[in-house]
Image 1 (spheres, rainbow, N blue to C red):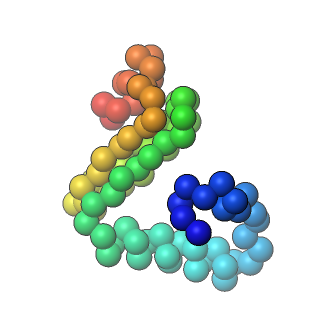
Image 2 (cartoon, rainbow, N blue to C red):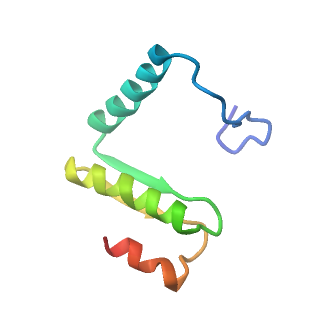
Length: 86
């Protein structure tokens, strides 16, 4: 199965237990600490929530001395570009 596979099941599901939540958080933190650069990709036609989320994760990674590139499929609307300056 590849990333672009249209059959890929990407539906959200509830994390049932605290232990499972802790495993998810640990895997995310491991990825953040073990890698040196990150590509943060937003959805098509990003709204302010998408852009702010990308910027927040990017800021966190930058504070950890990581290289970060934020990308979107379309140009970010002018009235949301201030979020990139945070």
